[in-house]
Length: 344
Length: 160
Ligand code: FES
Ligand code: FES
Image (cartoon, rainbow over all chains, first blue to last red; front, side):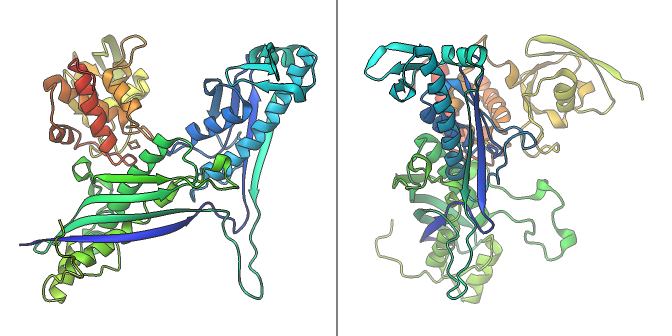
């Protein structure tokens, strides 16, 4: 038995969102009487951090503390319309809608404050701590809470805003077929190190080194964790997950998730990530969002690594021990490809 | 079929409920008692999201007959904090971004608590072994293992 080492590389240009039929997202922002802001969205947070990121975006745009902003994604029956959480579109599309809604709500807030302070709204600014003051004269101020109370109980005004962000449907040019299916791209490149056991066909990913370019990382810790978890999902997709494992006939196959192979904590792959930031012009504060791109490049990199280790090309997923072994047998043994000398 | 009276303590509080014969404990806690902290994942013992401590032992709520826990002491993440103060495992999970969707988190934390209760100084491999019955779809496990080791360090009085 030999453990053959292999290294695989893959890179990706990943389109953010889609717009074949148009890609809209809406957001609604309103304040309670005590000056807290609610953001209503219909894209949900599946754990990727939508709520955290849209909350940051809303607080930053409104100019209020993040603790005074609450994001509600609970119910697409009552929330504003949104296409949803998919295609890595959340941060970009929903974030842009939130900026627009929060900008309108901020304008209403400053107008209400200007009535109380008897100054022009254009001369007012926020300190991000819950106060609104006259520019250059911080002592002439009113709290956001007092402003909200006055607006709702004295002035008869809502501190609210509506926002929609729409990527127009892209029509193909009738002559050239050219179209523009996306608004911006995220990028990644990664190197996977692995071993292949030439007797059992088992592939063991030993390390991933990657660089992901995600625009501005609006919440760096969340981005890093999303990338680590997503890349691991790529490993899982490449090597383990299928509803049709191994068995020659369907009736011998699995019938529920008891038999669905997913790697557990014993299959953790060490992963070193460099996050590169190239803020996109049309993105909220430059953030594109990592989304599905976390997982995608891992799969071809592993496939390339297996080829590098034993000379077997697997053309369908997952790359099971059986497929690797059949490939090795067909080649008359493991055929390591282009191995540099001195590989660790 | 007539209902069966069952008494147990849940996170230190006495509970008395009538359960259907054959009802599983997870259902009884979530629907009957209103403790939503153990999660309903697979309901067949494969995911670990319903893990809880019964008389100090790690058990799966979905595979435990409710009528069998009479007199038992049940602990779930719902009762881990002391007043406003989260349990060190909860703090370490929050700080270490060890929860994304959070669905696996209660089971992970109870599996970790079962480990730390009997071994306050676990190795990385001990931790991996202890949570090997728990599936996480989001994190890739690494931050969960790190958080459990951090909590163990802090609980032994050393700040990691
Ligand atoms: S719900 Fe009990 S193990 Fe999955
Ligand atoms: S955090 Fe989502 S399943 Fe673990």
